[in-house]
Length: 405
Image (tube, rainbow, N blue to C red; front, side, top):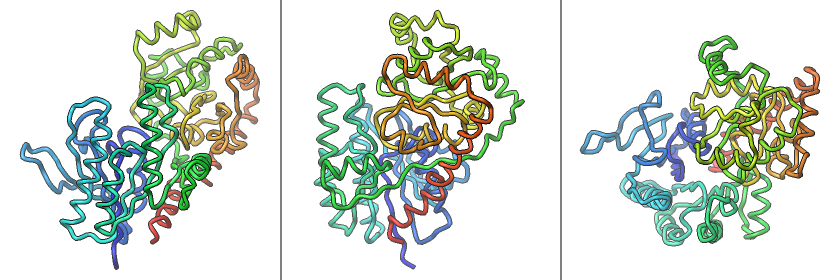
């Protein structure tokens, strides 16, 4: 039996950082016993979000560096290799992706791998993509791209960086053999903007498995007590505190609402930013608003989601968002910003709000008045949405078809 080799480039690590990191973890898990396919996963050896293999179970070290650190290992039957990165600020992401592709090309040459597929996640290396694709084609390989969302729209980037993102997207899409979109809306955008002949839609995945923690587990009850919260007594949001996630709108509207519940925000932030936000919104005078820090324990976070009265989702840039899928899989009632990406995922299993003044505040008051049966109905529909369209098994099967196996 011939083996199809897939090199996945763009994730910082496996299972310990964010969306792509969870994706490679779950994808390799789905296919770990299928020997017709062999994954090769690039990870960062150092720097922000680096690969710490000690946090993974069942690894086998393949190669060590001269200082004794792990250079390569197997996990879920995948070959994982770590790329050392210089300390050059934000540009390190471009360096890392390019270095990972070059390493992979050389690996194919050294191991006489035929017809490999290079699957690059997001559009960082447009500056180098044409040269890299020539090298990929020279060894009989193909280049697949997952463009992610509209990175060039993110407000955290200055004008020049956004311009590079858009240009890089164009270069990388046009050079790709196949463009894999994790959202129907992103696929429409790619087709309409670049007229790419070969696109496909494969979403991100999630699950509906309950947390392993019980409602009375000290880890969960202790967290609630520490943060001044009660089960079923708080609205929740989880995510990065960036402008395009609309935290400011959610806080402003919650303050306007008549809810007697709390609003818990699990997010990364700092005192300087919170002070600036307080000058705008005076949120500190509203005791319902609680910034509760970050939670990296996956089972605890799932338990917190399960016991939220409702979940807010304000993302408006990107495709299928992992935090939204996790909320639909765990929280009964979900209140989503009314944009195409979120409607596509939530369908009729969620409620929707607009950024207009007073709109979300009215929806919060409506949610507060819902019966238990009504909320339960939304919860059942949300879990069915995940099971039918976003389970990791379903996503894994679609990728197997993509690899033409």
